Image (cartoon, rainbow, N blue to C red; front, side):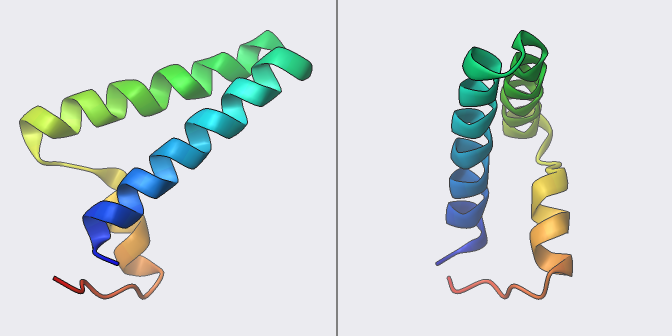
Length: 64
């Protein structure tokens, strides 16, 4: 799995978890959904993605 696919999987998982927490626990969890969305949006233009740094530090290698 490439790093880009891992980033997409991580973002999708965070969105779904925060959406569920926002519905069933507290609506403030929806701010996490907004943060993930804004981060994806800005990384499309700047190329900077904190999730990529996190995944690389966890020891993941790119399988391009």
